[in-house]
Length: 395
Image (cartoon, rainbow, N blue to C red; front, side):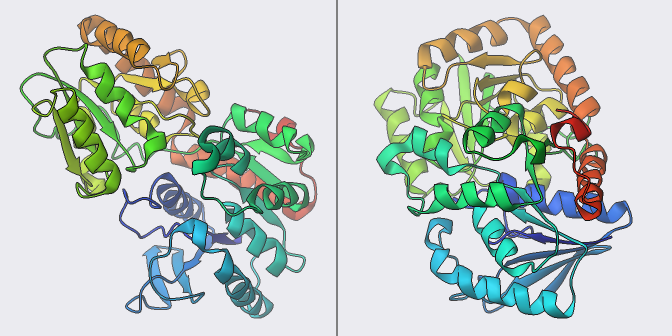
């Protein structure tokens, strides 16, 4: 099967941890490789962001990344990309007129819009990764998404041959938007279990108990809630990884820590190379991820794969991944988070039980070969015109 993945802003070869480089980049890269390992030929189309990028780069055997000229060859915040999407769409249409794939899998809403306009009869599968309705609900006036995003997502959901929801919570959101349930299939994100596993190197850590937050440096990730909770956790240190130490959010978090008198116990270390993330996770007594909202959430699943206990906000994908083998707390509630962390940090046996339960769940549900097999089944069904929606693969 020849499969083209569209990921307009999330380059699978980009360094992870920037404002617009996170879980989607990892997902697209890993899915492409896992599908290629099943014998398919995969091309990932992403926007060119540098004059030094060649037109085509091999990612892995059977996987090629194509850099599509659309707008200036410089990084552009994803919410400012719509003016360049017509050119991106035209480039795809020209390419597919000559060399059409068997199926197109679009990632994020702008990719879906471009794919549907350019496909000309080629089946299109859509993964949103995040929904404008949810972002607007939580961020309000701080939401920088283009005004037409929500209406466009609704149209994509109704026109795509299949929509892959990454978690059960997203199914409800999609149905509320008017997306036909018969075209929605739950296929979660995956984890590389060769890298993220309980056994392996352990990064250096502070002398006391260590709480780890890792992810993009944006306010909605809720790291300020963790700093506030740390006031009630004497003896614990917080390590914050992601982005650059000079990012606006990183500066804000350091200033908050100083205001609480915690500057000696809060360590903002910036971006960590992807290959070193498992060792960093293994060094922690607990990984905390308490965003206001989270479409899926790769961090808790990766931490669980490493056998590290997880405390997460009870939102989005966490309700599928963490519930029952980690601790869920309300978002933006420092006292509730502090109570949960005291309970976990103060009980070594509980930490061991949670770590083992998390690792077991990830092995059973989130290995990339399993996710790729489920995704391939959807591709086959849309090509054959026989998609059965949620009943096809289950939740």
